[in-house]
Every structure is written in structure tokens, then in C-alpha cells.
Image (cartoon, helix red, strand yellow):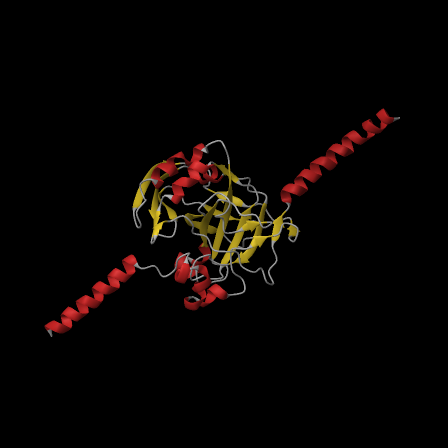
Length: 303
């Protein structure tokens, strides 16, 4: 009986050790993206993310305006976590942002945000635009409130929404990332966490104009690669310096520094990428109005 108990304790210990130290996926070698499909069947599905968005092969649409609730409200307390795969930020205290409108049917509630980056500034983003990669990409994950919870939403094809923001390098520091950077230095070790107080609003953290975007149906970009995500990829980039991006590369992963954590682009297959053109139409309407008013005057000058 004692030997049996000791054996059970040993098994429990080994399960703990495996869960704590071992990763079920990674970004290199036997754990890399090309191997994910052997364990997670959806990772070889037909509607996978990320993708390379060909701006000349999109369907122009005029979607309803996206409605952002509590995006402009400061978040009193947020928590940063080094998951070993990325840095993740959750809200501990403050209003929970929601979004509806645009291509969405229903309201989606914020769950967390995380980042993807590369080992230098020439690559790192997961989604690409016209075969161009970017040094950093932000994913803001929401779940469909209709399903009541993140777990239940994961069982439905319209369960998740990801807002994706791409970054471009700048010579001027982005002041809205000062507090976030200070937090990154506190979570270098895997599984370490740190609470940030008086975090700025998501509006200031993202800054990109939110009426010009691409949207498509896809998947999570990490296992289990579930095809349950509506993607909204904003066209404008967020400026950030090389030095600011370097803070991400100092985080530890399972095999040393986490210098890269992005999945290669996947085939588009039968999907259609839509580009919201409301901003373009608005500009065209203003131009047309200007011409209507000014054209008679210009013609008189010519005569």
C-alpha cells in the first residue's frame, strides 16, 4: 500500500513538473508551427490565421460604424503576465471595453491583449500587408457576450473577435507605452506577473484610426488554432521606436530569450477579405460637395 501511494505521489509530481516546465507548442524545431497540426488537427484547417492581405485583392464594402464602449476610459489596474509565449495583459479593475457594429453580429467583450514580435525590426508581425511584415503586432481578444463566457464562446464559429494593430518603427518614442515598458522589465521570467496602476485607455494605447480596416474570418494563431475568430486588421500602423520594441525581446521563453513568437501566414483558400471603405466614401463625398460648390466659380474664371 505504501509503495502504491509513493508511486501515485511520484506520478502527480511528474505531471506537475511536465505542466510547469514543458511547453505543448513553441516556435522552433519539433515544437514549431509546422508541427502543430500533428497534435492539433484544426491547425491544418482551411480557414487559418494569420494571412497575407493583398490590398489589390479585397472586396470594398461600406460597413456600419464600429462602436467602442469604454475604450476611452482609463483602466485603474491591469496585470501583465509572461506566459512563456507572449506578454498578456488583463484588466483587474476598471470598466470592461466592448465593441459592436462593423462586420459583427452582436456585442463582444474584452478578455485580454497580447503581442507578437520578431528578433529584428524587419519581421515579427503575424498578419502581413502586401507581403510586408512589421516588427510588432498587437492582438486584442474579445468574446461574444451572447455566449456568456470565453469558454462557451470558444465552441462557436462567431465566438471570438481579434482586433489587430501593426506597428512601424519611428525615431520618436511613443509616450503611451512608457508605463507598459516599465512593466515589461518586471516580468522577464516565465510565469511572472506584475500589476500596473492607472493604465491609460485602450484608445490611447492603440491610437490607430479605427474606421479604415480589413476584416476576414479566421482562427486563433496558436494551438488549438480554432476557426472561431472574426479578424479586424487596422490599416494604419502605430509608431514605436526600436528601443521600445527591444523590451519585448528581453522576456524569457522556454528556451532562453523570447526573441520571436509569430506564426507564418496561412493560405487564404476560399475566403474573401473585405476592406471597410466608409472613410474613402466620406472623403469622396466631401470632394464631390466641394466640386459642386466651386466648379461654377472655376468655370467663370476660365472664361
